[in-house]
Image (cartoon, rainbow, N blue to C red; front, top):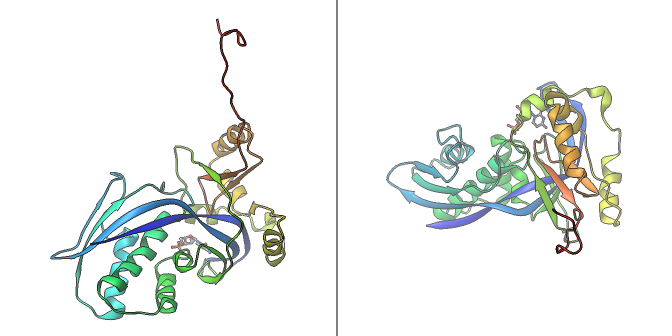
Length: 264
Ligand code: C5P
């Protein structure tokens, strides 16, 4: 049995550059892994089986874990069956890359379990066939991603930072958010300059998908305001949402007792 951590990500900035002829969007984004993670137990078995601690998660072939395993079978011509137990902590439809991360972890696990010694660069290419965000999870944790998101330039670690994830009770579908994007409202910021700002200690967080997410889920505006009202200086949509990451600390509370506060 092999047990691996499968981390979430946030997009410290996300610039949409244009819509492509194939329907995807050209993006430029600073991806950062965070220590909110799933744990996945893998073992070779008699037949394929996936179980999850999240009862709402699809366990059939639509789960990206099976897309990754099937791709591995197809590319390597190896015959195997896999037992997978997924401890799900990363919320789904949240823009945190949980499914993509699980797919990357599956490719990594199979390469180890089957001792196939596929180079990481090749695994990253295969990852791009599963989904736009999958290859990022083979980087060291910080990367500048372009193309659909699958062209990954690993970067040195940024200074350590704590953050809070705020997730409303509903999720958002990535294709729906991209579809509702108004290309005339993109930020026009220069992504390489934005990148330099992060490395010169003047980070500027932005996400071109936020307006599109707010358009299809108007109640997200009130949710964001309620998080801002808790005092976080930066509250930014991660990926296509629906979660926000919050940098800095919220309003502190201190001990009170009945002589200071008239609670009756
Ligand atoms: O690549 P992935 O399967 O994660 O993408 C899901 C959907 O999100 C795509 O089918 C597309 O509609 C949209 N998408 C996009 N541009 C990107 C990434 C995703 O339009 N760069």
